[in-house]
Length: 418
Ligand code: SR1
Ligand code: MG
Image 1: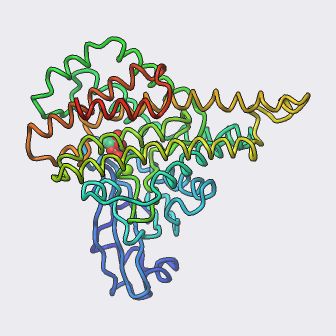
Image 2: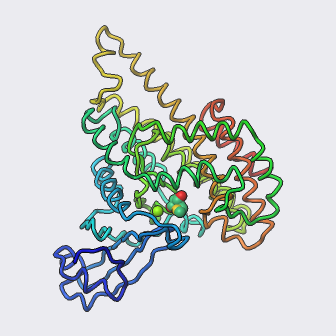
Image 3: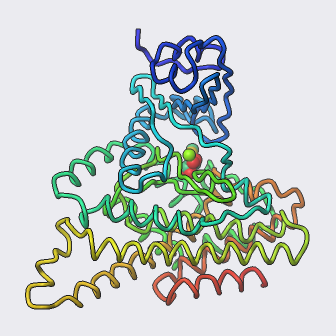
């Protein structure tokens, strides 16, 4: 029968060995394949399958949250959303994501290109290794997927059909609605902030009315502003890199949301890496150099996003929003440019808010980041986390006042030096 069954290294060869795509990509003799389960994320099984002809990744959803166990059921249909997001991202920004080789909906599994010798971005930065072109690749990805998945580019029918399709990703959106936008701001059951030195700052955050109001504004944007197909979970574990290349993986949280959501989450992750660096590079000069590089990546990601979004605005605005005819009717070309600048201003203010919230939830909520969690010296860990929490608070509260990315970077530098 075709009933769902989780794979294991022992059963994978026998179960997938008959697929043409596996024979071609891995080799015809499944008995000779080497299979390793390497999933280190919070949700799924991930296998590397190697054979004479090459290797692939097999990713399979589990019917529960792996991080927590079967007490937290989670639907298998997230593999369906991941598959649909991957093929759209590939069309909108070719080469940015792994190539999909096979999708089996009933088994909730995707066979995809193995990125090699890539490792996750988080691992790379924790080892103090830079990635050439990171800001360029991520800025382009965020801008192209944002623009080309929206009413700025798609036909109204296609966009509405896609919005309806991804509206089914209810349970994964629910995770974000709770774990990101709600739990960190009260004493929620699933929170696991384990650094007692932070108690004062946490109490301060939770009694900060302006912060809580602003976070709910951002949550409302997340739930109700379906502007484009977002990746939905663009953190430093969703990016695979070498020293020269970056690719984006894992869009199972894909949903229709605000233009600034993905780039905001991403910048929140860059900023956490920035504040965690002193725990990972002991030489002070080398650490400062690496931190400067992270800030330059933030700057580049946003400036590339802006430039690419504007380029697409000028050349690919084929959707129902801001129609060219409206502006070119009587020579009003500049009005269109000013509409683009205003929209980019709105995206910037949103991304700043999302970045700050991401920094809070990764310390106070259920799902943490290794940059901070692996710091063994408790006092150093508390200092790094405190900088993230305070910067996050500053960003969320001031998101409508900050004049540009320079102001964000200056705030990060101030938080770092105290
Ligand atoms: C229960 S899932 C926790 C987190 O892991 C995923 O990668 C998302 O970031 C989610 O919020
Ligand atoms: Mg993931």
